[in-house]
Length: 210
Ligand SMILES: C[S@@+](CC[C@H](N)C(=O)[O-])C[C@H]1O[C@@H](n2cnc3c(N)ncnc32)[C@H](O)[C@@H]1O
Image (tube, rainbow, N blue to C red; front, top):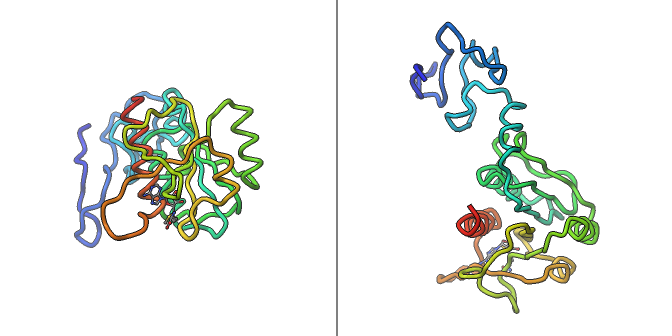
């Protein structure tokens, strides 16, 4: 890469990404002529600089984890975007949104372009889907009866299901899970936010399986 990672922007601020690619351009069908010509300011790892979205998705598809992440969405939880972004960082198989179809995309920072986000009407529909794909469902919440995530062996192919910021996992979701795992806390707050919990849980899965 001959371009610097950061170049001064119009206001004298440093813009992320890389500028136009010097000529001659590499002969590579994965590269996007628009990005080569104008620079690539996207939040992508250096390996994918100037690649088309389609080429990045195809490459990610080759190495997706067999981990699925699901979150209940009854009130358009603002955490879903953050969950999607982290799910992209861990290259999970898919994110499943249960309940309302619409979700607040802001926190995703367009990472939803790089993975499947699948909608399911309710927990029953999702549980049926998970059963058809032989995926055990593990709830993640700190509720009576939950067991520590720390030290727990997680299945390689599975679903981690998260609840909403306001109420946590619904009773239907709790019933559908074969276990509910909590992240042990040591302070005074009742819980961490769902986006943070999802990041911890995905990392816990990743250190066992990657
Ligand atoms: C803000 S919590 C709300 C519910 C929580 N059970 C309570 O009593 O306050 C929202 C979601 O974040 C996740 N979460 C937050 N803290 C957690 C923890 N310590 N362990 C596991 N999950 C947690 C769970 O998925 C939960 O459904």
